[in-house]
Image (tube, rainbow over all chains, first blue to last red; front, side, top):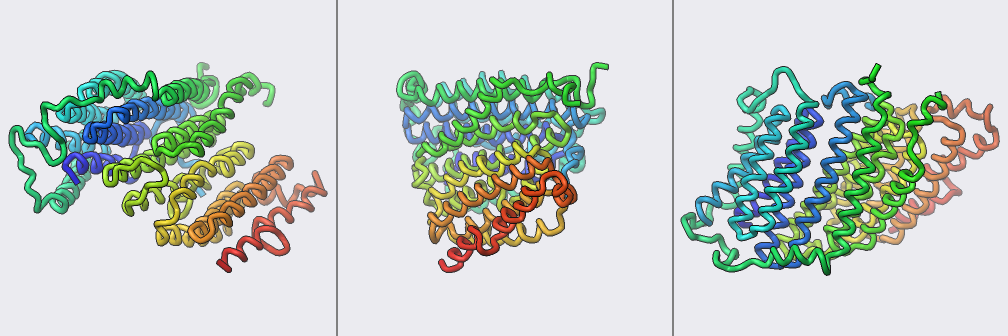
Length: 98
Length: 175
Length: 277
């Protein structure tokens, strides 16, 4: 394990823990998802640079495009939730509990 | 591994601690700015100039402007910063956990910090990387991936349009 | 009411695009041997079903969509993280080459979150409850296919994780469904229990798992269609639906008992052979 490997693993884990344990706003959850995708982008890019495999450097770009898709879908849902539930607080998402 | 690189990696992790410790969305977005800025520096430090540029321009330019707009949607009267009690407690417990992990992994390793020192396996700093040309493969052999990406982006356009349609329903109405 | 809602319904062209993308996502995941492309297929799959779920813009539907999106995006990111870690440790991006135990466990947990295996199942009853029956049908059949294909391709190494997931899922699925009056929640717990059985036999006989999956799809399909035709979503409505369509109500127990695994129907055979294995 190199320090770079440690850095992106811990950033991903932090994002995942933040998303899992304490969120009050839907937007904060989306920010955590973005942080996870960002650490994955850095991991992909560093892997490419480490192994000097030039053909793999397409992968970070594809990842970035799809994380943009994910982020915009999440923001669309944020708007839809704000319309139906009044705010983006996660506590308001309680209509479906058992 | 130079001191600059160590500082950048620490900035990356610290930025995500800032996002994960559940502050208000404004501050979360600020933490994400820190992560992407330092991540861009890390990539540049490993001689990946093009990918670093992509991260800086596309990610910082596009994504965070959008998030800044939506932070306005989630506005609160009293935003919680990192100095707020709960946020500070969470962030410090994350930092303690990270330090323990770091000590477990690297406690007995000589990381050879210093100017010009490169951590094992990263090669000579004057070496040219092929990633600028590699991204160019997208136009030839990686064409399928580009087409799929374009398809995904187009699909997302439809998805967002469908999700946000229908202003007349829900709690916010024009009446 | 229907007339008033009519202008807001989705255009058929967009509906076609979304349904085709739903198929495309699963197909990309089936066809890929590289983790990145498998992930792209999963993402396309998730993106395409979101508007179908939030079709009627009811608060419950939007909430279910949001919950579904958050879980699926997290699971997809975890899958990619597992494969990246594997690439850093072993240098392999191939789906069949995910051999290091740490990413393998992480991947199994991510896929369990994606298909809703206990103890990562809690989103499934809530999401299914918020949907209409047609989208619920898609969610509990077609959406399971792509993660299941990935699970089948990486199964043989991590037996303890799989057995634990399977056991907990069968127990939680059986007990969780007991106290429910909402049919969609019962179906969600039934899905958890069935997937638990499949995961349990996965490492011994993968072909039996596939057979169970196919029969589960068949029976769930018929159950959802029956509920859709009777337009029932609660036990109460189901028990009084004999006044509306007596023949179908008389035939419904056949499907339900078959889903429950009673003789002489299909599912018993599989549970029996699972035990024999």
